[in-house]
Image (tube, rainbow, N blue to C red; front, side, top):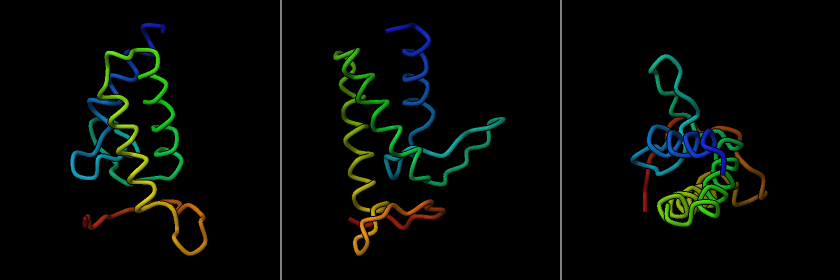
Length: 96
């Protein structure tokens, strides 16, 4: 795995994950976090963290966060009636 990819995965893990929802924030620009949950950011995060884990199996936290983001997608992003993915979640009231 290339060092730049390792740094990207590590930075995304340390700085991109919402501590409450365990999902990926949309972005951080100039130190300002955009905490919206955008469907494609969540989808790419699952595959990105899973691939990072497969290339660095000692980083079990990458597998765990990929699983957490997938659970978030299933609970909040996938519309239960239509099966379509909700484009963006601006605010989230977390419930169990």
